[in-house]
Structure formats: structure tokens, C-alpha cells
Image (cartoon, rainbow, N blue to C red; front, top):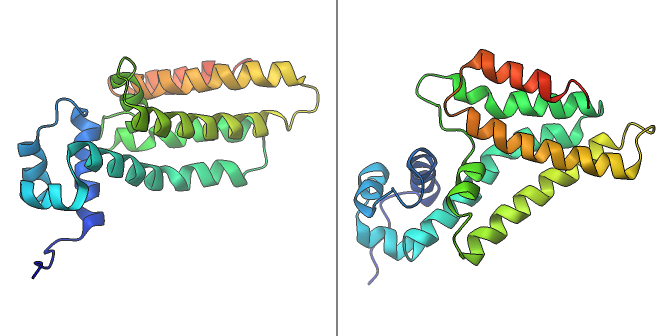
Length: 187
């Protein structure tokens, strides 16, 4: 007879997500996950298959967490100003005590840039394609911009968002605010 789980998967995945976010995939050991999640290795393997499966679930959890910020951008109607607000919103949690960890997607994107892990690459590409599409939609609200200009600005903003996420791990709030303001100076 199978034992009943004594934990909620969504709660332990969120704990794992926070650990992966802070430490990265490679640096996070199974022992660290056991301690952080409050469950043993057998339970991790039973529920998620392995560390990789747990990491994929953590990425899905992260997408859900940032979903509200993306929905706010999607529903907004002020074009470039909405994207700028998205930039501010995406780093706002970094300035709460002990929260300097940037963006899990960008951290993962950087960590797996040389890795051939197809499942993780697909997750990253899907997230970035969605974000780029939102940028294009908002930039296209300015009827004076050509399709070519919109695409160039969307590509620029996608790269700027990566830079912002990386900088948010180490730079001061004032430096980050200056970065955002300068990013949007000519958009």
C-alpha cells in the first residue's frame, strides 16, 4: 500500500524554486534540497523523478509567480510606459531584505547557455518569445514606428531586461533606477 504524502507538492516546489533561484541549478545539491524542502530524497525522487524534474517544476512555479507582472503588462494600454513599468515591477522584489537574486529565468538562461539540455532551453525560449511578443505589441501602439524599428527596439529591450536582471543581483537600487531610465530615454 502506497504511503500518503505528508507534504504539499506546490509548497515544496516553491521552496526548491527559491533555492535554485538563489544558488543556481548546478550548485544546488540534493542535500540542500532535502533540507530546504523538509522532505527526504526518496520523496523528491518519488514526486519529481530527479533533481532535473524538480528544477523543471520550479521553473513552472516561477512562471506562475511572475504571471501577475506579465498579465499587468499584457492588459496595460500605454505602450512604452507599460514596458518601463514592467522593468520596475520586475526588480521591485529585489530590494526587500535578503532578496537580491535577480530573475530565475535570466539566471537559468546564463547558467545553461553552454548546456545542451533541450527541455530547459525550450522553457527559456518559450518565456523569452512570450516576453518579446508583449514588447512588440506595446511598441506597436506607436503608429509612427515602422515594423523594423519595433523589432529592433523589442530585441534591444529583451537584452536590456537580461542585463537588468543580472545587475539586480549586485547593483544598488539607485543604479538600477538609472539603468531603467537610460534604457527608455530613446525608446
